[in-house]
Every structure is written in structure tokens, then in C-alpha cells.
Length: 253
Image (cartoon, rainbow, N blue to C red):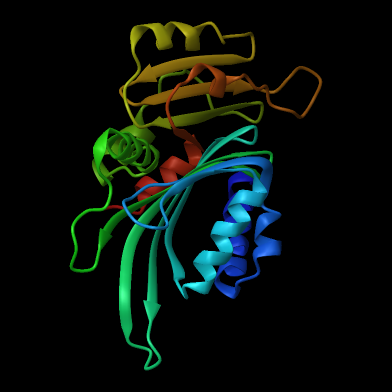
């Protein structure tokens, strides 16, 4: 539910951006937001705080650039949300002919519905070379790739994830299984940290790039238990229920 709300919030913010409503757009950012725009052009730079970001956004709008989102990926928890947005930005002349077009990725962090960090990375300009360069560019692309990889699985992977049953009698009215989809495998140290989160109502099983999280409802309540998984993992991830993964896998022959 929270991830759906965040996606809705992002789409609403992008509509404000398209309309040039900068004041409304700034409401989606935290007061101490840090924004980084990579590249070797006049738009590149790093901005700290809403006031500095406001100037950049107004300049962006005056240039006539329009953004079109193609994919939005949201992961992790409300207090440490990871967001990746794949977009195209373009400009047209008076005859509505596209004179500039660029593909880009926005990588961001949000906390309780407010964007606290964003990084804008151009990936390819029409007819031009790749715009991300240097160590910073490689690191950012790795982060974005990890975020997307955490949710994008091919059909055999989905079927294998949905079919694995690491816990006996796991799905009952008082028990559920969630699956954390990771971008990369876990090292032994992180695996050990995950296992320290085990309780009487929580169990974990790690397999390849997935963490199977068995949960029971708290005694005497209708609430499921929760653990600080986001504080243990140091990479982007997203969580889906076992039933959700089964439905996804069933779409493939």
C-alpha cells in the first residue's frame, strides 16, 4: 500500500513539474533535500536545500523541457524508501518538432513521503554519446541497476522463487511469508545479521538473491510482527508477498 502511495505521489509531482508549478512541486521535498545533477553541461551541479533547488527547477522550466516517465520502481520502508524513475526529457520548436531528447534516470531517497535526496543521471542523448562518466557515474548506474534488478526477474526466476517452500505449514490465517527481492547476493556477515532478527514470530531463510521472511500474527492481535530489516541490508530491495509472487509466476507459460 505504501509503495502505491509513493508512486502516486511521484506521478503527481511530475504533473506539477510539467505544468511549471514549482511551488507545488517543492512541497514534495524535505527542507534539507540534497540534489545532484550529473553531467558536463550548464545544468549540472549539486544543490542543498529547497531554496537552491527552486532556482534550478525554475530554470529547467524556462528551458521548455518536458519530462515523460516510463517506469517507477519503489522499494524498502517508509523511513528509508528507495525510488528509481526512468524518464525521457525533450524540447520542441514552434512547429512541435523535437529538437532535443534525452534519456535519464532519477535515483532518490524518501523519508515518510518527503524526498530527501535525488540524483539525476543522463544516460543517452539522441544522436550523442553517453552522458554519465567518471567514477561517480559508474557508482550511480550501479545503484540504479541494483534498484531495478531487485524487482525485475525473468520467468524462470519468478517460477523458482514462487515454488520454493522453505518453511513447513507457512501459509495459514495467522502466518504469512514475504519475500525480499535483492539486487545482489548477501555476504556471510549480512546473513548473520539477518538471522539475529529471528524471534518467536519471525523466521528467515536466505536463497540466492531472496530472503524468505516467515511471520506470525502477534498473540492476541490481528497485527503481523515486523523487524528492522532495512537497517540490516545495505542494498536496495523490495518486498512482495508469497501469494503475489505466485500470481506473477502464473502469468508465464
